Length: 499
Length: 49
Image (cartoon, rainbow over all chains, first blue to last red):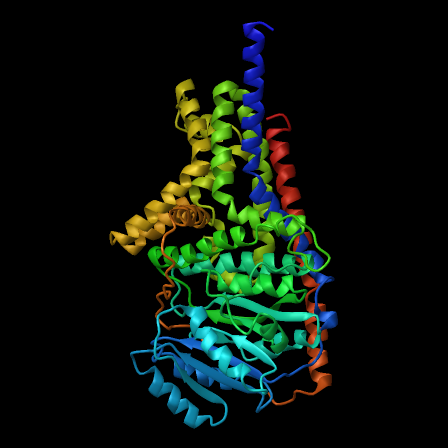
């Protein structure tokens, strides 16, 4: 073998590796498309056939820390739920509040005797799981409770939501049920609308698919209904060693052979962050929790079991397409740039194939999602259109219609792009696939620096909301690798949720 | 609402179960739009480009 042959072999190996990296960029879109192709299957394969009228005694656990402004109204709304009288009890676990929360809850306990209870923790600030465990110990000590609802103090359950959840508990195989958390701020802004559409994708879409797969990734923190048997089987407590206690509970439930069901018709309104900084803080906790879960259940992934479906290939792909999203994006950029440097024509063909597929998957996903919650889609139409960001939309258009930005648009102004310009354009497009994460991180910096919200809104429309979530996941890798302290920050909210 | 009779609750479950069939048509519409879009794209640009 002469030197030329060796060089050619090395080149071929590099091309193959770069091609694999570039194609990895399509995995998240492929998995998202797979999930949304399962959505129509939910029309026929769902849990409704095994549901039945069922009204267990429900103990509602409400963790509260300085919720004096909202807790009274929350209790009133819970007492107004369409549920048989005498079968609902509310336990407010006051996490050593320093405001008037105790007074408000005690007044409500007097107003609803035997239905509202005030449980006080003298030492607070240890996190939501510790607060919940205080309440769980109390309700398990009594025989009355048959099902337990874990919620947040500031969410609003629509009147029919609880009874739509309890009907699934008629099936003894079910351990827990969750609902659709819908963004319900009274004064929405661009970011809360983005979150609203994200919840349509992640809950009304993905969780329907997970119902079909028989493996649920996470019970929503503000809407978890458990059977008593399930709570007892979990050891009568919520895990306190992770930032994703909801996910641990969800996994443990299924690992013990019980099903977790998503009920799309049960709607719970919640106020979500209006500032990038607050969103970052909230999602960093979630993303770090997911990294912890990934490590904690190392022996679970891609190992099918007869007892549960968490080890199925489909669920593993669903989990890792989110958990490894930043790495897929980086791999796509690096792969395309290397291919371009070696063979620009081939790189462009790979890019077009990749992004035409990604684009079609994205269009299909969005079209299904807007029909799943048309009211949300009408409210958030700008955020629906610009979810990946205006720049990424340009990247998609350049894949669908090659030459549109290098020949057609300059030609409209009587200009012609030079070869150098074309090369710079192509490389910029490839690099943007991962560089958008840096742009997203800049949004957080701008927010912290006090940039005007209108400017930040324009910026986020430009770089996209998806890249922000991707960047937060990358930040979670760094924090976990450094072993940063686990801090349970309460998400900043105004308490203005549509009733 | 005070009627929690089994008949009424079962009727509600049946209504929600039948209502869930709509996701099939929503997906069909979405697929049709994507196919139409892809056809337009390939009609304009061609397969090779």
